[in-house]
Image (tube, rainbow, N blue to C red; front, side, top):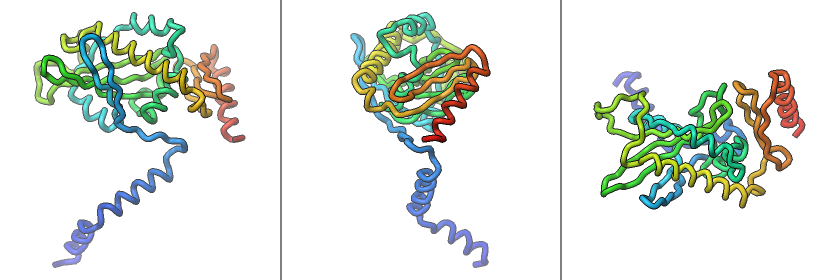
Length: 247
């Protein structure tokens, strides 16, 4: 056996648990403070028609699954109605972000960091007439709004659908069920925030640079500020950054 063979043998025999320990300790060392790990927590959502299990996904899980899905048209009139409802927190980036993070872990990275600042992907799993169905839903902000990007999972070798094209809702998850489902999520998040907001009011801020928006929590108060000029936006952002240095 030559020297290169011995080298390969040495590499292969390296203890996997030790490697995992090194990787995990390195992640812990360099990741940001107060990081809340993403776990596959679930919420059961019951309607008159069915029971849906909503399961939080990691970015890796989300990216794998969305390769085999078709997009569903979003009902923007419904989202506009929610944004005008002062009884829910949907119109507040800061409250939606903080509550989603508290319940399901840190935001993912599946967003345009110029037009958005958070992404919470979930799997929707349910049965209908003894058949199982799965959808993806990504709750994310884009520009000045929050969207529920919905997609139906299909088999990898299914060529009957054109990927990248938006479809109207299917009979297994019709529009009225989707509307109820989204209303339930918003109502659930609102109720959770109102009952537990004092427990997760740590200082933070995030930006949507495309629309000169800064949102966050300061001194226990949530804020969502939209600035008229880029200079006002930059000045406010610098003030918040200075507060981090002071603290």
